[in-house]
Picture 1 (cartoon, helix red, strand yellow):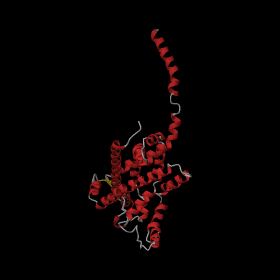
Picture 2 (cartoon, helix red, strand yellow):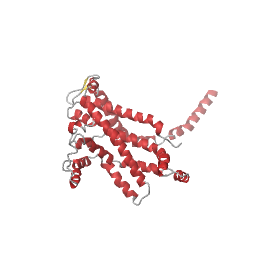
Picture 3 (cartoon, rainbow, N blue to C red):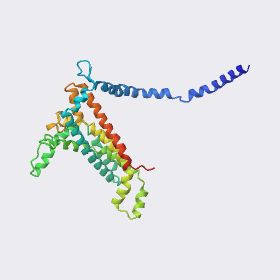
Picture 4 (tube, rainbow, N blue to C red):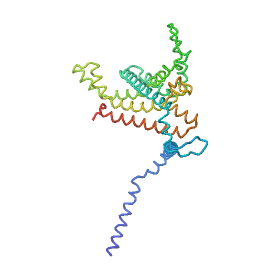
Length: 313
């Protein structure tokens, strides 16, 4: 009898608690249904191709024949490919030149707009517009017209009696034109800097002014330390974007990599190996090498951030 009563008690408790367990997460099914398109896209268009490219990086594959496993041959070939390392060098110079200049310009414009001038929304939109169009084909074609032999720059120089040249076709200046294009698209980090400046409490500046601190002192003692998380965020994003730059170099150089490969970005060389030479295995190995480089720079920035980034705890 005691066993039967205990069974009835347990059954009653199960009936009592059962609906609550079911009702604990009543919207799970709806949530997964809404996430389904994104999950399908993640698996089919991101994770799937990444796994496939990792496999292809260890194969000899030309799109026309089945891939043949070749082990580390592609990576050994990369180690001795002088043109690949030249493209990597061009990319490194581009990243370490364009990103600091872009962030400096973005911060300077953000400080100017933070003064609360009239028409702030209009100016903010105008400065942000190049960021929306900077990686487009149209802007890259426009850049060719500006820096071409008969472009706008040479026409302006002609007014002062200065003989211009084909800036894009000269190996000493071609990369500089792409650096200027990247710096010109400063709108996105500028908006983020502006949002960060608006979050700094005004009482800090008032207290410093009472203590007799000048504008430069307030900037380096208050603004910069409190803005370092925003600077770090912009730095990480812009370094990643700069390593991935492709459209500008492809359109401005006409897909050739410029004179003496002066604008042959790593991504452009990867594209040529994949879709011109049909060397998909080699291009896949290059893609994973670039991924590791970007991950390494990102990890280094995170490690370095503990020495100069200050969070308001």
